[in-house]
Image (cartoon, rainbow, N blue to C red; front, top):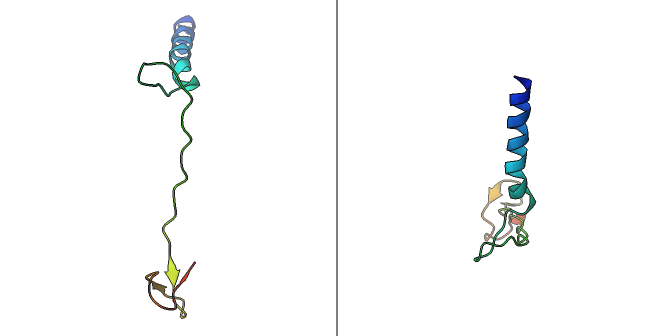
Amino acid sequence: MRKILYALAAAGLVMSAPTLAAPCKDAKGKFTKCPEKKPVAKPKVCKDAKGKFAKCGTPGAKPV
């Protein structure tokens, strides 16, 4: 029973290794370096002079 479990675990590692190494491919199917991901921009939140949330375009509103 142990031998079967070890064999299945080894097969799973072997099959997943190429996908972990270089998951990006070009149009011809060759592995390439993946492009870097751009950071996600935070939505701007603004508050007025009283401390309440306001639209960022209104006069007196400052980004937090």
